[in-house]
Length: 331
Image (cartoon, rainbow, N blue to C red):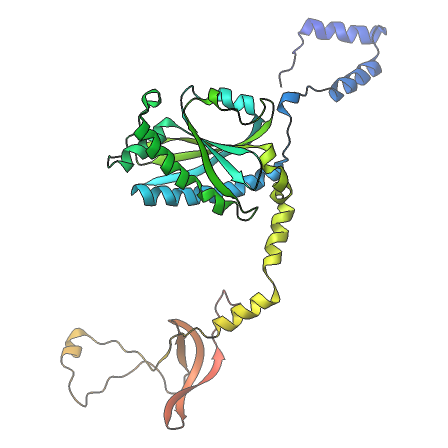
């Protein structure tokens, strides 16, 4: 915030006025308090989502970005990286003005929720996807104004399948069914909500091969209103705690007890040279480094777990456990 800086002459005049009684210092303090109580508020930019709810949306779409990365990499057979750049709330009119005159727009319905959501794909990314789909190297260009019907069809089918991964990402909030309703290149032809309606804009950084750009997801407030209570940290904590119950724990414990593990006991070890090994013959004796009065080590999945002593049980070779080997992590 910028502040007015007084010159030395103005400071001297102010001090002189206070000293002579022309200006009361207490009145200045009261005036300053009243000025601090007043601040500008733009009703066109009304914030309808709390910071906690924005963080909840960020968590959901970070998962969506991971799912989308896997889809892009698998379908295009090239390097892909998608991350959440930002999650903001702005008026719908401001979002439309911020977009280029020609871009790739995908409009989806989100049954059973009301309203529609919009995906704006940077042309550089859209053409990299198209080029890669048609067998090219994935070069990104921008010729949206000359988009052919075949190119539009290929793009719309690819992005329809790609953005359906949002259904899986939103499962923790609500089960939705995404359906592509419109594919457009001119933002002015799209009017999803009123200009002053608050929308959430999720911006994703996208890299496909050597091309990079942005994908912006526009979610109107009316779409999120029925599930807005599920975006808070309290809901997430409550949801996580409800997942763990005694029945699940017992079932998991019972399943784990049936897992097979490999156990072995090392009787002893010895170091010999290659020459000695090559000249080994029948009745030769190799001295082990294990003393007869010291316990042996029992390994479970190659991890030392118990001290044991050798013996027999029902004419079978066996070991008796003397104690447990506890490491730093166990302690």
